[in-house]
Length: 402
Figure 1 (cartoon, rainbow, N blue to C red):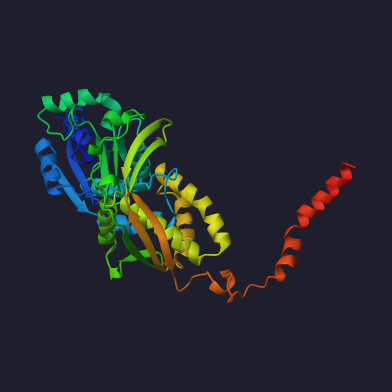
Figure 2 (cartoon, rainbow, N blue to C red):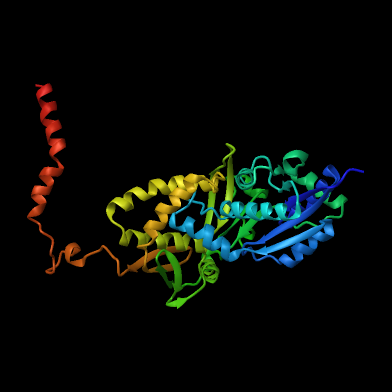
């Protein structure tokens, strides 16, 4: 009898990965080791671990990586203003390289040479995990059962039922959901029709703005060298601060996104996101950054932000370019110290105040009142020099046409 293979499976407890345990056992004669990461998704991970074992996993590992996720993945993305297509703060995309890191670690510890995941053949996550694994250990083989078995959603549920595998998805509740502390994404079911308004049942983190409080709430977020550390004057750990902002933003109906997204594989998909803390922090950080950085940095950085967002979305976290961009973003973040005041009201969040000891805003130069210290006489000479190339071009063109 041939020796059984060892397969390390990224396990979420959902439909795809639960079916994958049994399928890998049958198709590969494999011992399956389930790996689950606590990314702040709010699930009963002890229950997920027990479910993996009950379905047939040889062992089931759970790792609490919330602090690592925030410190080493979310914060760099925050500094980079990483929002894909200006709508998606990359919550799922940021978690995949970290998941790959732990899959590789367990594979090396267990002496396995196969890694598996539940990603489909037309999703982005397959690219993110496959490429990340290759970057960390190119000797490991990656298997994606959902790319092989070609089950429809209904056939997959039938397979689960026939094999006694409990899953949280039913015909009546067909949504595919991924969430972590940085955001929640929902797809499938009626959401696949881009004309249909998302039913209220798909939202869990955010209240219907119509039912949000009738009075606005004001938040003050304090940053120290780029790190968000204070909320309304009180110090929080990064994990707790993000959790609290998710709660406060959600109570006021803020953080919903309905996005028709361009996937890496070339198709468009309709995605629903809930990301209250992510949007609050990105907006607060960007506003404060603008206060403390000179014009040239403010104008140039968005060029790099777009590239950074695209790289994260497309699974290129473990790349030399991303590391190089991080160095630039970290240098800028050194100056981002101060406080931003945000007004939350009925689904909206508006920056209404900002201050910093490193502020480049000078009231004496900006004011039009008696304290005005700007040298208005200097403007005439500045305009002459600034417009000189345009003036010379106009003179030459005029000669050509006469």
